[in-house]
Image 1 (tube, rainbow, N blue to C red):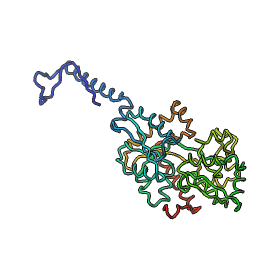
Image 2 (spheres, helix red, strand yellow):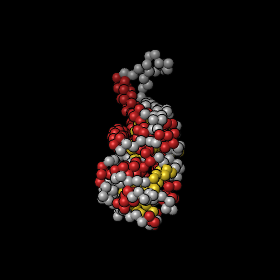
Image 3 (tube, rainbow, N blue to C red):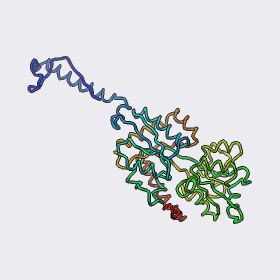
Image 4 (cartoon, rainbow, N blue to C red):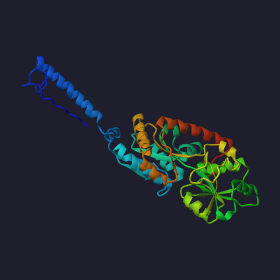
Length: 370
């Protein structure tokens, strides 16, 4: 956007200016008036440039094209709902349309690789989780992106709680009772996994618990939490580590029984449910940070100014009461508080921590998935 100004005191013309005819060079008081007017014009222009609305300034940084947020999650789930709340909240702040593009499949490889190859101009972002930013790069040799060169963290926006649960008919009422069944070789204990267990935080919780306490259970891989939940409610599987979202109504009705939460402290939605440490498994809690996150990232060469601009918009949106009220319904935690640099460092720390956990428990993908 360009701003102009004019002044009416004696016109000042450069000798070579094409409109020099009819101009006069001021002298004395007239010259001083012209200089004052010229200085005033410069100050007015500066004031106007400062007064540009934030949305317009940000749009100039990004251009006027829509921003596309690619997510590996299917439509209708809690993460999809969360991504759409972010899109509608940051759009007016940035002054450009923000749209969600769902590209599920292959544990998020399709979405992640598409974003890694995108033009690094701030118009293509990814809303993914630990699976895409940490687990796939560590475990899947076919993953076609390097996390710390092909992506830049914009904002760790969301965290979520993992809840160990069983169906009411199982007779299991505590984690110790579940472990007793898992250690009894005559019991057929079945775990409902959200996809390949090695590639998800909930599946990792199952694998670490099993290995740490010599338990035994069969994992059935479902395309998501929703189909596995149907089998859990029907008693066709024994237990699961699930998100609170989508299960809370069944826990409240008694159809499902919450055994423990993997969070550092009890959660408000389930105040009577113990943490894993309180349930008698502090070693489990020490193996990992069991508050997985979902984050917005950009292609690796996206300029600092654009990354910082989008980060500030996300943090600003997350602080609003209207956003908090809408987001509460997802059952997820808002975590957008840090700068892009701080969240990049947190990502690096999480990567290193999970890498050590995978090595400690010798967790790898099956041969056909490597």
